[in-house]
Length: 269
Image (tube, rainbow, N blue to C red; front, top):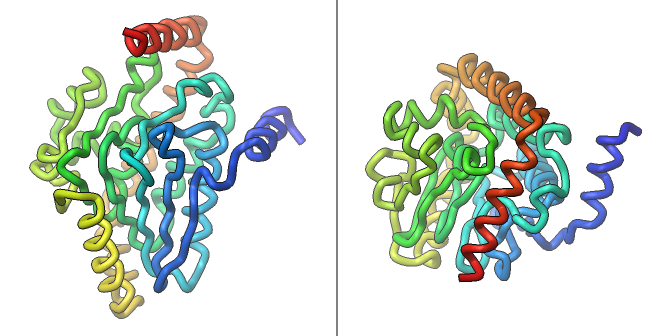
């Protein structure tokens, strides 16, 4: 076993399996981020757990739709800053696996977003089939503030959804996207007053999808997602190369640590 594999296995072992819950209800798989006291911030093992659960849902022939949601007051506040240097996401190859998953024939994926939606999950769910939001939801991709790079097909999905100028604002200037803006640009499809109302609606949508002719649904969804896939795959490859160069640079760790210190100092004020 390589050093990288040993590191990954160690991270998995020390991760609480209850940090992300997995339930199947009426042929819908629910993936639930479950660190409410930390606003569902991702520690190292949660990336692997999330990917494993997405793959599990894809491979289960009894699962016809997938809901992703968060417990507590946030969908996810992004990477747990206390574990920021716990492992190297690019060396662990997890970005590549997430990007590859986006091109698989998974069941319809629906994200139910409330509160903060921060970090890698923002570009990731741009490839989901539906995104629903509450009025208090907002989206934030602060990767460049940490000296990192655009990732998880954001370099192609964001310009397509938002236009080049707005994509620059979100990915380079690291501006936040409000729930109403998400609806305006078509990133999200429905907005709700409460997460309870959003969840009820999400369940109804999944029930409708589950009751459809599955061959018809599968073939139609495949066609919708087919066009432009080669460009998406190439964008993902270029992003991974970019991330690798940055993580291997002499200045990355220092710049990331400096930004983390600024965040912690601001939090004390």
